[in-house]
Amino acid sequence: MAQGLVGSITFIMYIVFININVEKYLKLRTNCILGLIFMLIFHFMTYPYAIYNNHVKYNNETDHPEIGCNVSRYKWCFELTAISPWLYYISYIVLIGVSFPVMTISLSTLFSKVLGPRRQGTHQGWLQVFSSFGRMFGSMASASMYVNGGPRPVWQMEIAIIGTTIAAWFLFFNSMVAYRPPKPRPVHEGSENSNQSIEFVHHS
Image (tube, rainbow, N blue to C red; front, side, top):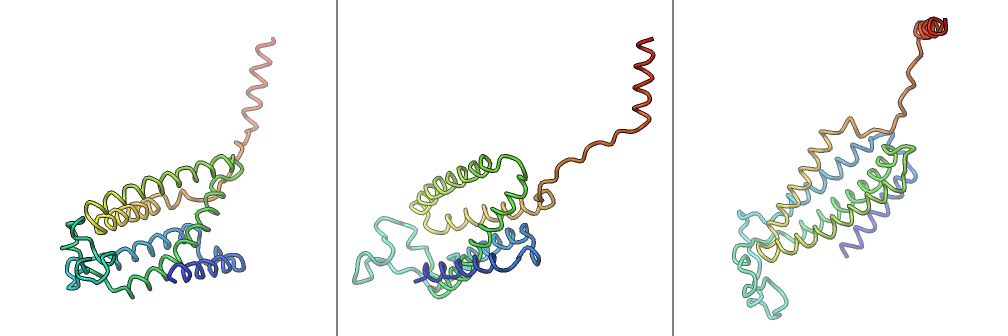
């Protein structure tokens, strides 16, 4: 159900971008930063802080062994706290449902403008290649970290990556602008006369 609501919000956001000139009110660079901030807020809100009183249920405490944390396999189950399911699902639907379409549309449009008349297909293709590498290696790293330490190190890694990306956006904010072809250098009249005089002396 949560995925369905996220899909509905994503569809609404696409309709908004199609019918409204959002760039008139918010720059594409600002939209990308806001999307990252929403993702960062989501991870901070859903992080299983140690100060929480509620702990996850163990699989040997339930009637169904597939439900709960497997204490025989994961030793971190004894230290893992639980957050409210309502908090998780509401923040996931709202924050992730808004941030992903906003970032997807804004980043694709901005990257196209930054490239300008250069080889769009090649550069867009390389962007997708590295994006695929990130999803592939990121999922493997997350799985390994989850097995060894639980969801906390995974959340910490994502918070660090998102925070670093936001810092990079602020650092290069003024450079992320549409491509502007270099202006031709003006030819001064004095330089033409001097060239002509040099040519005259040479021939004489």
